[in-house]
Length: 160
Ligand code: FES
Image (cartoon, rainbow, N blue to C red; front, top):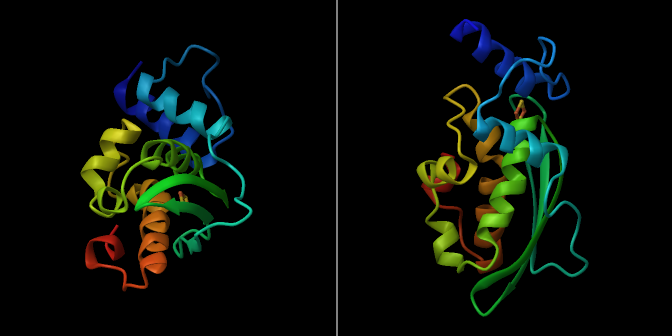
């Protein structure tokens, strides 16, 4: 299949989030894109925590997508994290993978996370046009940690 058409189909899938294999069932998606779709369809850590140490609401002003994250923090570590939200397949798929990844890490390790580490975690680089979708959950988690610590959000988090 022509490369441009292939990537257009993936783009359409991620934008609409519901059209699977737009050209019959013959479109072989990249393994990382398939993993993203699996997380979108069956997200991990979806839900709320009853008594979170920190909670934050984040939205994406460019598209209206939203996420709420709930953190359970103990002894400087993220013991548990849940999220709820409404968004595209990249934002919700990334939220699922990122919440898996940060669980058990120290607050410092999470606050150091940037776009490069995020791309490694989710396995795809969504490009400049969709990076804001992929970073939405990580940004919310980091903001919730700063809120928990009573500190201002740092510049690298604001720029995510
Ligand atoms: Fe809104 Fe992706 S289109 S977060």
